[in-house]
Image 1 (cartoon, rainbow, N blue to C red):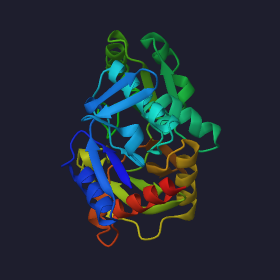
Image 2: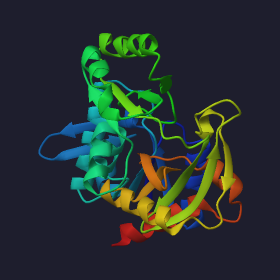
Image 3: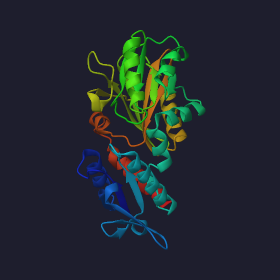
Image 4: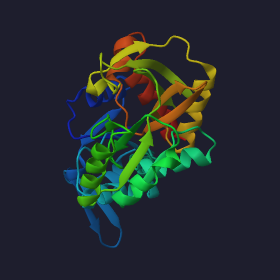
Length: 300
């Protein structure tokens, strides 16, 4: 097989490990970025990368994170993935999964519709309505104000509900710059949450993410510490798999927190990293497990 790895940097840790894994399985790998693609619409669609039509040559494509892009670029890249998929080339993750996961509102509504517990959330384009509607979030001491689009904790701010002046300034700044106000109750996880790494129908591995002392963000990319979970609670495991399926993810990083006697899912990442997880599970070759899954699915 010839496997495409769509990446901004083939030498990055995750991309390099994926390439290694596919090559170890005796498959050829073609790494390229979205900016390398030329779409030609003539008598038929052709997508050229360095002069080669990838619709004619690739057996499957694995997509790594888009990075910071404009709205035009984001829409075009998702359109490209749909076109590739529609022409019979399997895409991991599917464009519908990426669309749903990158949009926090669409993601949380999808999870709620699937019967999965999620934090109470308030979304509006008007700052005045955001503050007037706070009672809908119940008796929560803290709120987290997040960007609608983004991951790894970037742009998220925790604010005391009683600090209305601070909350007003943050929300007004968002709406003034034509961003949507996305306010979510802060789940009191005491600085520890769970990342479950789902591949297909199973949780391949899971870890606790521990926030630095005095901090609330647990993201490993933001300084959180990984701690392996040898036996994930079956309730959390089932919930993580269910969440990935609801969002059509073949591969997913599912973030859970436990509070008030139950688990909540607050984010599903369709283009997850696994460097922190790999560090605490050296005996599991995560990239190889992903590669094996992709190859097996592509054969079908």
